[in-house]
Length: 195
Image 1 (tube, rainbow, N blue to C red):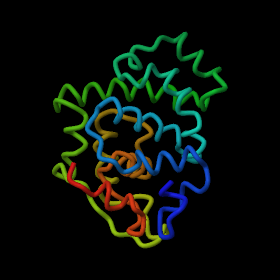
Image 2 (image 1 turned 90 degrees about the vertical axis):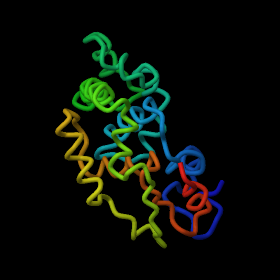
Image 3 (image 1 turned 135 degrees about the horizontal axis):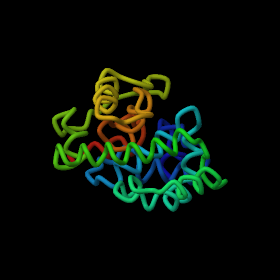
Image 4 (image 1 turned 60 degrees about the vertical axis):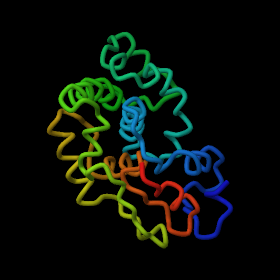
């Protein structure tokens, strides 16, 4: 478990096994799969105002409710399905966030149609390159950056909701557009390889 055993490693996973596994295997790995991009978008929207740990522990339930994070299936969710989601105690039952998953699925498919893929769109902000930061301690890692402001504005203009700059930065970190593993973390070098 890289996140919990190495001095100088990222401390945010703590001792939570699921968080450590997410850090060690997934966070910051460059993504080039539209379904996974949509999954991160949905989960990060649900994180707004909450902890990532809370969302991560409900991830499998979200996957079931939102049809494996298939944007076409989420975009087509019926009022009955949305009502079942709102009454499902296994997920975060925020009406606005549930509705945003559906409207964001539609906007996501619009972006795919215009750009060939969401992946091509999101990586265009960095010319296909990962921004590799060199933070020494967690206190240096920003909550938002000029890049996340730019992505936020572009997503909002494309019809997305729950895409504020802080949410966008978390999304960019998760998908490896930004490498914010601390330099003392073994994952910093591992995910810094060209994608």
